[in-house]
Amino acid sequence: MKIDILTLFPGMFEGFLNESIIARARKKNHVQINVHDIRAYSKDPHKKVDDYGYGGGKGMVLMPQPIFDAVEDLKTEESKVLLMTPQGEPYKQEKAYDLSKEKHLIIICGHYEGFDERIRSLADMEVSIGDYVLTGGELASMVITDSIVRLLDGVIAKDSHIQDSFHENLLDYPVYTKPEDFRGMKVPAVLLSGHHKNINEWRYEEQRKRTKLRRPDLLEKR
Ligand code: 6GU
Image 1 (cartoon, protein in one colour):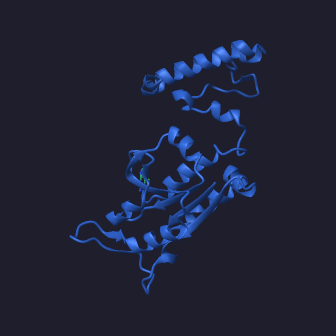
Image 2 (cartoon, rainbow, N blue to C red):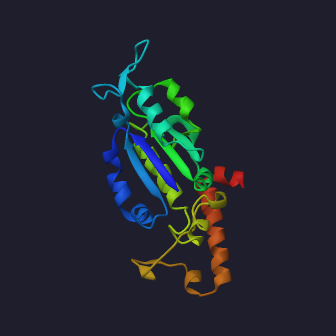
Image 3 (cartoon, rainbow, N blue to C red):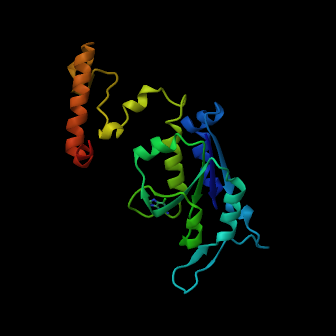
């Protein structure tokens, strides 16, 4: 998969791209992630990318020209264009599975007080990562990129996503490691039993209990 990210703040992506699982997935060529500076596409002599909004009111608005030029430069028949905005469709694990099957994603990060409404016409989908407002789409684009890349073949052990929280609308089961007794808090006996059928039943029951208690809305979707 290839992911092109358009941003005014490419420096924000440094740690994200060069640490942990995302760094390893890039090294192994499971994904190619390119971060593009929107300013580099500005045709303005001073590389301006935003201006005052018509009609007054809120501050600076991202201009259409640099974003249109960037998308037109990068887009092919195989591309899907995502626009990060708090007004987008709420992002869910199911969408991460869908997007992980795409060949090429172009992700536009909105910034400042807003972007020119005409930029919306470039997007196949507008995405929000939750009901709160961020200073820009950069963190949101990293969130969705991370959730997609970990699902690509070879990035993490295959059956580990079957155990993920939200798989089949259930939260994950509790896990323990050494020691068996930590400050009087003991590992449940079933996990030490070596009885795989009982362990699986216990895990499923724990998933149901935890989901019912913490996220009853998920159980209703099952
Ligand atoms: Cl995608 N962008 C911004 N600026 N804020 C958000 C968001 C996106 N998703 C939730 N809040």
